[in-house]
Image 1 (spheres, rainbow, N blue to C red):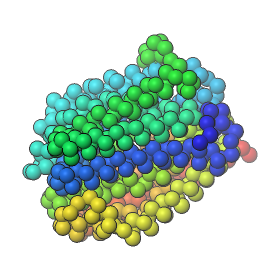
Image 2: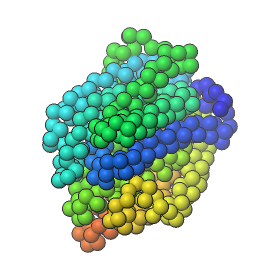
Image 3: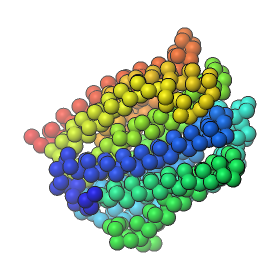
Image 4: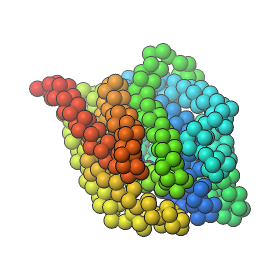
Length: 450
């Protein structure tokens, strides 16, 4: 794949540039998602269906803490992309150093608190009954590696911001491949059960961190920081946190959604319903990889060209990104509508879980063809540094629509009300995002080019 320099973000044709940015991002997300998928299949067949539910309880906690790194990475990367576009390299270097310091301080603090309150957190996220014991085993071990994961997620976004998506892809692939190998060794060969699954996940984070550390120290990265850049700068920290808060809020809402869904489904259908949701959740992570790849590829293109005041290229990048993402989302929709039974049987042999999961999967993905507008629209505001609209649009789907729906609809329609909440929230949030994105394009981009 041709090498991309940061200046190429302003010169290459948008079609070609988006493909070059999105393909590595998509492959990285695919491998990472495939890792989660296969990991769940291994756990389901080698340990049992309860183990799937146990991991589903732990994921929102560990991912929320790790998402601090992602949010700091995306927030800072928006600044870096625009700074490089405006030829302000010192600001880019200071931003990167501050990102590292912030990630370490926040994640180490939250991991300490998370381990201290372990017996309260796990039941709150649905780890009740038979699910509690395996969830506690998995939770304790996985949290040890979360700060390393957070640094990796932060560095991954920074490497993409400076126009190096291929290295970001490698950083996502390494822990995924190593996790699968370690899963097989620890669970199947050594028989370590949940401890094996947890240690495989934790140790795999180190591979990504080691690779990114090499990348930033090597000649491949333009961001060569020194000790002065690690000192927190109030203005930079404020800008990082305001933009990163968008991503963190999204992950916080995702974690809250898991908490609510696990508890609501446990009360409606017991552990089998929680397992069904875990399987559908894995497919949400896996199946959407090409759409998320386009979104990730779009971010530095929009941010760099906005910083360079090339507003025509920004408009063009929005249109192309939505078109590509919509086509990919429609293909995903067709496959999942046709094959939910086969997909479910990959995860488990539990008859009751196999009976209820396919119908749930069809409803959860029912509005998939239209979600590109929502994803690209929210990402655009984040890319150009407009934190407030980015935050509101990011929270629209799950915070403003989905969570209220899962409280209201199950009272009338039982478990079906939970599943139908997904497409309703997708449609409503897409309509809201389309309106605000159109207004912003007319008021900001078109007005500046006339």
